Image (cartoon, rainbow, N blue to C red):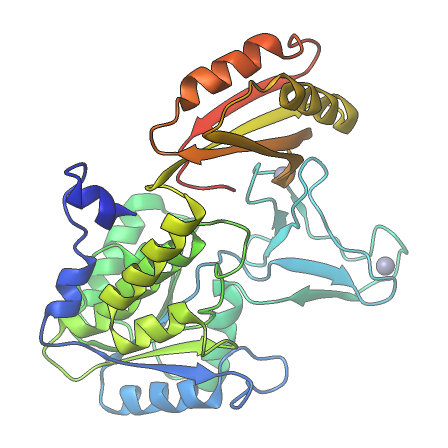
Length: 369
Ligand SMILES: [Zn+2]
Ligand SMILES: [Zn+2]
């Protein structure tokens, strides 16, 4: 989207495509995880591990990127199947093993990781499902016990100061393998980092967000582009179960133009921003019935318009946050449509806000989560 807005003078042109035009591009390849699967219980393909070994032997640095904090995104009981969810959100609790806690990344709720299942009482049968950066670090240390491995994550103790020291240490070559979340995509320069492995390149490709493809493309381009900033020959490897997905193909071919052309055509057809207008109206309340009832009332109060239409109400992508149930109406229309006036009328003619009901309007939102 920033590309089109730039040509309309709203933002300066994204630096993304400039990097693609530079000479020292990294070699980018996908690893098809169906053909080169990790060992049982692991998340790193033998192809990636092999490249990491070669990089170590050359005394150069590797970066493993995974945009997931903590140890594991889900904990369940192997005996009864109980899953640990947040008591006030519709989200699973993320295990942070170092702190011994289960944490909700949406509202901050945290609790001690118990020894026994709260549902069936069985001891020592809780299993961690899926990887976070802490778990990837564990796997790396098992494969490369002598390498100097460091985890960069925004929730580690020590805050900004410690983070700055660690970034300096990495730039000075004091680490061999860096495992990091989104933080590492933000413009730090590591001249000796010649291998970037994206642990789960599929993360973010399918989450019901119309802008997911663009954000995934930009994030992965930033991360893998990091390997291209050095004078040395560098390699970016993307672990994926969907090597034929258009986003993967665009990244690997380095063809940002083709990606944007395709995205722009799709959006013109769907009248999505920046070619159309889109607004989300979120109704939240203490009970599901209140939230849904109010959202339906708003829908009925929507004025007649030829250039705007209402979708929903449906449960919002995160249907429960902080104990509040959330329903969402989407309003979509042409660029020139009077979105503000439409919503103002709908709110004025709709049911009065009472009890625990809250209404939140987000016009042309950047994120739909
Ligand atoms: Zn159980
Ligand atoms: Zn929560």
